[in-house]
Amino acid sequence: MERYNERVLEYEHNKALLYIYSGAGGTDAQDWASMLLNMYRKYSAKQGWGFTVLSQTFGEKDGTKNAVIEITGPDCYEKLRRENGVHRLVRISPYSAKDLRHTSFAMIEFLPEIITKNFQINPSDLRIDTYRSSGPGGQNVNKLETAVRITHIPTGLAVAVQSERSQAQNKEKAIQVLVSRLAQKMEAEKTQELSQLKPQVAIEWGSQIRSYVLNPYQMVKDHRTGVKSSQPDKVLDGELDKFIEGEKELS
Image (cartoon, rainbow, N blue to C red; front, side, top):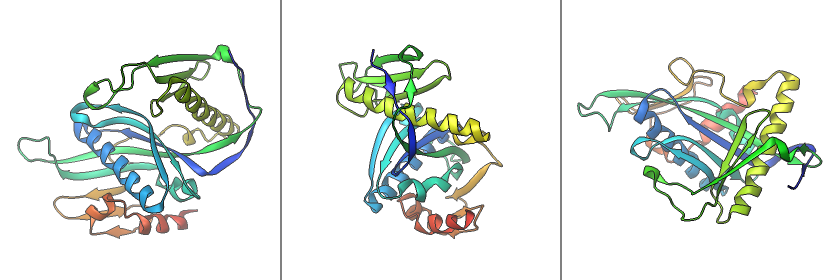
């Protein structure tokens, strides 16, 4: 097996990895995670950035349990890194037979992709599994096992990629993402900032950085900056500029 031999140089300013996790709220939370995925897809399109879903685990009603997305474009990580945190949605649930108001939560996490060279990964520390790419409802998208999941056994970190057409391409991309995560973990351990790797807060009430209220009134509010919008439909359509600008003051 080939040896993955790389050394961390610096963050790639033109690439970011977006992780989305559904939280408390069941089917509504999974639907909310899909809504956030689409919001960042539309924002990225407005910026002229690339947006590739590397892997996505679907839940009930075609919602998203979790997803990993690669975003490419000038300074995309620098602009989006402060979006990290719990995002809360309040609306009339489309899944409620009684039209009840429901609160849903999802966690957003942005990591920079890392330029690497001479960073060693022992091949014996990797478990590589292949499977068929899946789509909404658990249906198999491909007849061949082109999707790849690579697990770094010592740390338990796992990366799945199914965006490319061939198994070899997915494996190469998965290795790139895994190296970024391992490098982040090493740096975090040195600085004792493990929160950069995994959400360390409960994805539920009291942890949110931003609320999106669709009922009984219309409002999006960032709880850190105080920035508001009375047009949540436009925010969910990717109009995030005022929130991104407001976040700059947090640094």
